[in-house]
Each structure stands twice: as C-alpha cells, then as structure tokens.
Image (cartoon, rainbow, N blue to C red; front, side, top):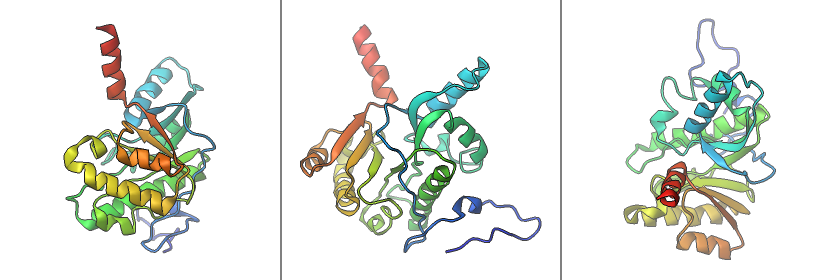
Length: 238
C-alpha cells in the first residue's frame, strides 16, 4: 500500500493519510507500529482522565506540567471517537499526550456483531495512530484487541514479536461468563502469535488464562481501573 502525499487541489485528507508516511504494511495493509516504551508504565489513566488533568493544569497556567502516567483508551468509543474524537483532532490529542509519560495505542472496538470491514478498519486505525505517535517521539505500547476467531488472521498484525503489549478487561473479557471463552481463546492466540515478554492489563488480571501466561514465562502486570479505585476508596472509608 502507498499513499499520495500530493492530493488534488481542494481535497481534504479525511483518512489521515499523513499519519502513514514511511509506514510498513502487512498482508492486510495493517501498518507496523513499533513498541518504543522502554519500561512498563508507573500508572495508567484513561483519555477522559488525561483531558481533565490537562484542563486542570492549563487553568492554573501550569503549561509545562508532566504526569508520570501512560494514557489509554479503555473507555466507550463515543468518548474518544467521532467527529470531535482523536481521529479528527490529532493535533489537540498530541498536545495533551506530550505532557504524559507515554501512550497505549487507541482501543477502537471490534465487537463481535460488527461487520468484518469495521473490525479490520478498527485494527488499521489502532496501528496507524500508534505508528504516528511513535513518529512524534512518544513512548508507545501496542494495545491488542481481538473479536471472535475470524479476526485472528489480522488482529495481531503490525505488532512486534517479543515486546510489551497491553490489553483492557474493564468492559468484559474474563469477568463476564458469557464472554470468557471468546476472551481466553483470543488471549491464548495472542501469546502464541506475538510471544510478548510482558502483558500489561488495565483492569482485572484474574483468571486461568493469565495463570497460564505466567507459567509460560510471561510477565503479567495489572493496573486497577478508575472505577475499581473509586470503589476501593469508598470501601476503605466506610
């Protein structure tokens, strides 16, 4: 795949082709996104939290602030995608992210009931956005998102072998019995294909598949979600 960097006069780049400059592509035209983080994050915050922190600091004229946290997108898609989402406001997104320690690549959804082209496009955007953030000099860790078994042919494409990868379990995954078999099948496939040395998990990392990964020598690190942290604080103060 290649992109024309000199479009016809008057054309607008609604596909963010500028992000793909110099990219390498796989069999399904998924861009390759290097892992550039040198260490696991000290903590994680969602994009929603990052925006609030940014607004807070800027309102106090703290323009050079730094938060020692990686930003993730393990939140509902409508909170970061759409007309005013990160795909169409990449300049603003980058301005915010530069104040943080790094970023997990976006978690565009690949729901089971989505048409296959949408799942493929979501995977494409995850990798392309991450590749572009790497080019901007940010430490980046690849988010891995799979659907049902038909996505296995492309959902791991564009991610380095034997690197750190990230997954989110806050919206379902192993916590919900109805979704557990699908999650565990994809998790095992991810480990078998990518051979990650470290898996960071936003949310719960309890379950047989995580125990299995640890037995395979994979380092699993869990980060409590914001919701879990809030509930824990309430429990302590009761």
